[in-house]
Length: 292
Ligand code: RIB
Image 1 (cartoon, helix red, strand yellow):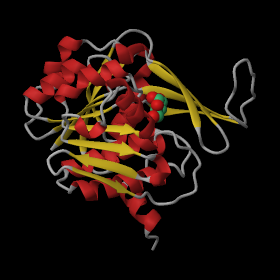
Image 2 (spheres, rainbow, N blue to C red):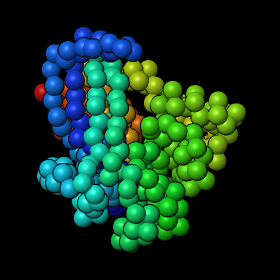
Image 3 (cartoon, rainbow, N blue to C red):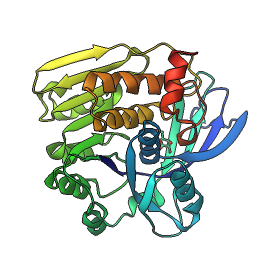
Image 4 (cartoon, rainbow, N blue to C red):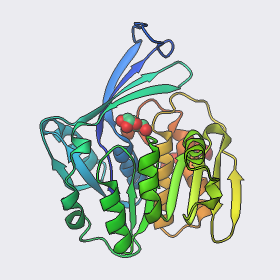
């Protein structure tokens, strides 16, 4: 089966800092790097590294050929990644010594996707395939509603959090993935507990504390601990979790096994500095926890 991912592609400009800046403060970075990122691209790469077939839907600017080529070299399908306007999205990622981050994104082409292009982009999708999107592009509702009508299993990662976008997406979702802060923001905004939402499966990532899975049909609300690792950089760990989780579901794994694999992949990812370029392969994840 295939994962169809409507998602952002960013140039990630990463700056390591002694601490995250406060208002009015100027700081000298101790290192700088540029790589492939964007929550969408990270999820596509993660799913491919977990052995899924992925078609990425989105937009780059004229300056983004290197990102298209890099996605392609990683095995992500890019024939639905169009070029719109001069400028691709980018992210400024500030990272402190404990691996925590602050991120500023400039969406540019990521938010110029033509909604009318969505049916064509999904024309080869088959019932049972997975549709995934996040919140760094436009056209999510067109994508989710079209994917749902075509019989795809519809997943949404509610990041970066925006309550109106989540509300608009909710009626179409089979799977909702969000972190603990986003979950709390959503519950406060809608004045309802997560387990009342009309979504078959809700997964809340809890960082080092693991993850929570709410299953509507079984009326279960379970928490799973995460493996303990040394944190270098938390950036992209949630995206890695999501890509791995959906890839495992797509391969027919149970939700419990998919969550276990996703947690291990996310744990390995926080030991690495960078985003899409350093997402671990399935073998690297296995070797990390069971070295020969
Ligand atoms: O989740 C991490 C990602 O957020 C980065 O790759 C950056 O591009 C921003 O989209």
